Image 1 (cartoon, rainbow, N blue to C red):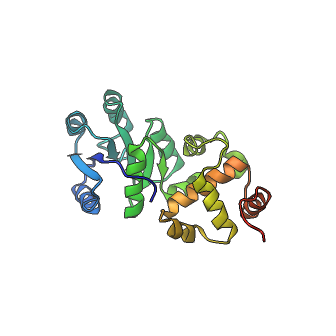
Image 2: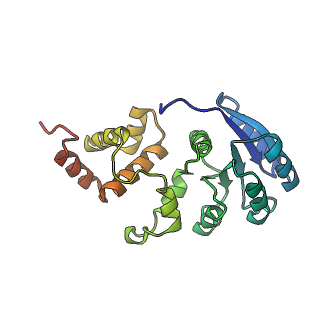
Image 3: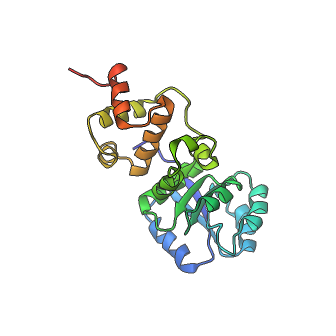
Length: 227
């Protein structure tokens, strides 16, 4: 796995009891994630954002209870909290609205446990995380339309500009050997989402837009052995 996981204090803001309880059950076996508070009204959120000192706030900002208008003062008063949005919608309008609140990460409510856990840890580290379904929505645009797209720009905002990391070189080698994203994820003990993100980042850095181009680059740069 990638590095040692930090301890994360999580505050859940959700008006629906079943969803709050469901999230508690999903995360019950995660020793590095502690649910330090739950809020089902905006008044509770104001109080618990201060009292529980969370690293991450998980919230559905599309709900009538926690709209962007009422969330903004809470976030302004607690700038150390990183926000993970978990919503039933994946429209680009909804995503852009969330980015206006400086929300770090986005999940859909039908995402699996692995993505939920990974998103919480990424958000706690002040990184951006987009679940696989949302990644697909962002990347639906024609490639020439992506630069300057607020969603696309945020997706890659924390990427290193040029130098390939050891992990990225490792992924290029596995791509060149013909492994699928899932096979690479299984080989490296990472989620499929992480591999998709690495792969898109590699292509952006190298200005390459297909697998064949990656293989050619790997051969030219002696990343893979052609003997």
